[in-house]
Image 1 (cartoon, rainbow, N blue to C red):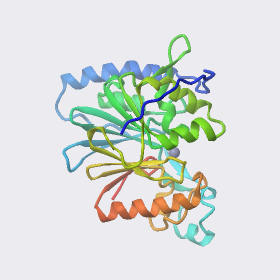
Image 2: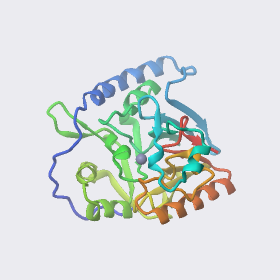
Image 3: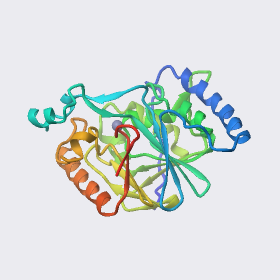
Length: 296
Ligand SMILES: [Zn+2]
């Protein structure tokens, strides 16, 4: 079920996103990459920071690392973990992680799950270019939640400094609960309001349990944020921010990260969805899993 927005938003367009010249350069490169890919249509060389896997339904999913370099989640992000448990991991510098997005190619359509950091150091645009994917060819964007490292990549600046859509032709799908929480209840929401206002004409709000285009099922993964969503597509389960420290949480789903807004619900969602993935032999894809972003 889709629910369209019933009202426009009176929003001060003072976007906090700054310095988007990288994004613009990358967008130009995207068409160059496209041309290259179409002339050399044999196996493309492996693109750094990406990994492509085939799904049971013939769709392809590509992990795209959005952060630059190595990402470690620090010990103090996991207050739930005892010192002895943490020490047993033997990861004194932090737990290997990433900021990631996932690109699915299904039924001739490109679907992007989350849009990454954007002007805050995001590598998505240059990696799409290297993959030969023009941002204008992204047909849908599904959002797991509205934290900056998942939605900032939806916005860039034009040459006059105005906010513009990065994915001009994409329908954007977001959870109704997540949307309502950020628009009404959560403070420091300027960026969230601006992004949603920019995409208001292509925004579709869903409920948990809804079947969405291309066979995507929206699932309750609430806790990290009020409307945090997981998505199932064939044997793929996009788990968003269910886990921030995989090495720790894979065996201890009761342990939250301090980013999780409702810890009780977050732990319940983590246990439930990890068990669901195991029982149904799903491939998990997580936005902060360590490279290459997938977990069995
Ligand atoms: Zn995140």
